[in-house]
Length: 577
Image (tube, rainbow, N blue to C red; front, top):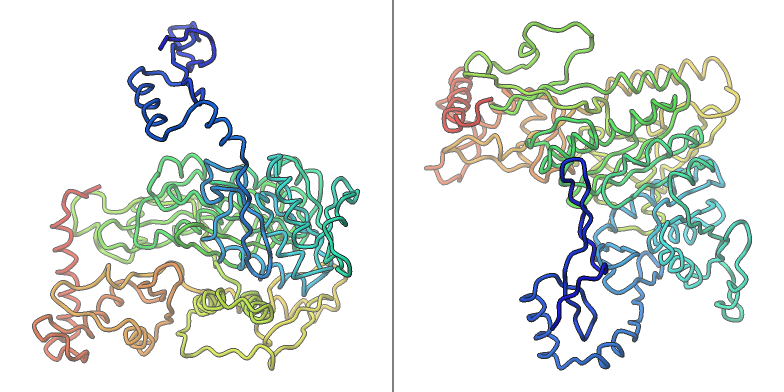
């Protein structure tokens, strides 16, 4: 076995002073598979593995030339052909993740609800991969959409074209129908629609063409494509952004979040909603740079992704209103209390006064940090979510209905027991400034001004009044985790019963999709803890009853809550800031 000094394995250049050394590294070549390995011991082990498998040079070459057949998967009545190792991004050009099925169904319901406003829609799937998302749009929505699937990789573009033929869809490349598209159809079968497939950089494509609906789902962060997406998006169009860089958004890599989003972030009990507000703030800044505003339709943060869907409102006035909703958050490190900073440019002498808690006066050192900038307004549009729920019922998407219902509860901040929907019976059409929108009741109409001529001044006045009432009814920001604020030595009540207790106390309350044990409420943290302690039972009683603790009056309850906070602070004294 001889060592090789030829320039077939370059080493990364090393900077020595002002000179750059780019010498070639010595290495070995495997006589069976021609692999290049640097160390001699690694090469010996590599050859032994070939020998244990009984592989020779001729057998290895013959096995490598045999191409593995592509697997065909089915999702939502759409067949898609995937490459081997399709679920491993490092081993395939066309990545397909079965765990993102909820993401694809949410986006499909969004587009289906948008088609009720106007049609046909110019839709773009900027990162097609296998083309599964664009295929579902074209196959189930038909002539209501004009789908464009884009990808920069040549192998992915070829796979997308094959998947189009597999689903009996015509492929249009550079405004010309592909010649062999009809060869894949059997006698008596018809084409279900047309799909335009492009091989182009996503930023270039979005600069060249205008769209009504754009979906961005790159591998990792999407901040590099936001400016191009908002450059030519049409008025009242929708931009959906899927971010899979959860390590930075969930505060596991804080330096990456600062680099990509320009945001300071730490791990909190509400870290998933914090991630959603970070992405919305980045989207809002990109829209404002293009003199456009946004209206957040919904934001979802689950285990594998963060999905944000916004409606675009053109004009500098909308851009200014959007920019005002980006604020910093003051977060207490001791009791997890949080509040958005007040508007204004004046520097406050003591910003701790804005927090409802008194941890700064009772605890040593700095107790609070500043997070953000974040989106401070609502994350959900109730009317649009109800229309999405109807579309999911109409298209038979049973997997997504539970999540959409939870989003509706969360947007209204009401318990699930107070919600009921009968989509087919209550369905009607409402007109908003010349645009007919299908809704479930009179309160589900979206708050935006449509294109075209305005009907009358009375309609504009009513729309303005309606927007003001919706703003006052926004859901409270963030949520509390019931386990995070449990009292030591006490058994907590059941989550459903605790929601009833908070509602009986006069607070708005609902579950949240961000955390299965989270509670979204407008109750202050001190009131939240006092009610939790009031309906908790001591551990020695075995938790058999969940009634009132008779010996604890209101003053004693407050003192015990403060004592528990002090005990946690003393136990974690190393966390002083």
